[in-house]
Every structure is written in structure tokens, then in C-alpha cells.
Amino acid sequence: MSQDYAEIEKSARLLTPEERARLAEAMTESLREAMPSEIQAEWEAEIKRRVEAYERGEATLIPAEDVFAKARKITGE
Image 1 (cartoon, rainbow, N blue to C red):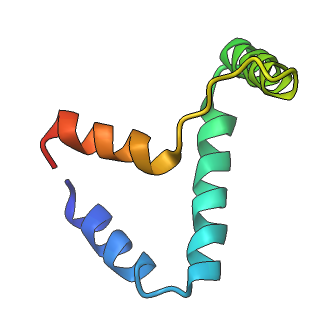
Image 2 (image 1 turned 90 degrees about the vertical axis):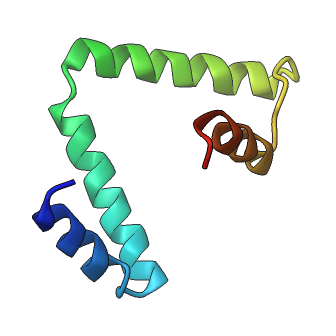
């Protein structure tokens, strides 16, 4: 991790929750803008497919806390 990153992260943690949410949204959007258009189109199609499956009652939903707990277990955190 670069020193710049560590300083930016430290500063970002001092923001209010609302400011951190806006910053996270801006950073996510910057990643979308950097993504090749064909990959973005595939992601949008996948999102649409998943939403439609959910709306038809065909999707198996997993609570976020379960997903994060499993990820932490896998990564050893």
C-alpha cells in the first residue's frame, strides 16, 4: 500500500458517514467509467437478469452478513 493511499484512507475515515457514502459512490463511478463498454454492458445484462429472477421469486437470497462472514473465514481475517 502506498503512503498516498494510507493518507487518503485515513483522511476519508474522518468524513461524516454521508460524506464517506458520497465518496464511495464517486470512486465506484470512476471505476465504471474506466471499464470497457462491452464489459459494462455484460454487467448491466447480468444485473437485469438477477433482478428479474428475484422478482419472479426464483432467486435464492443470502443475507449480506453471511456472505461477509464466509469471505472473512476464507481470507483468514
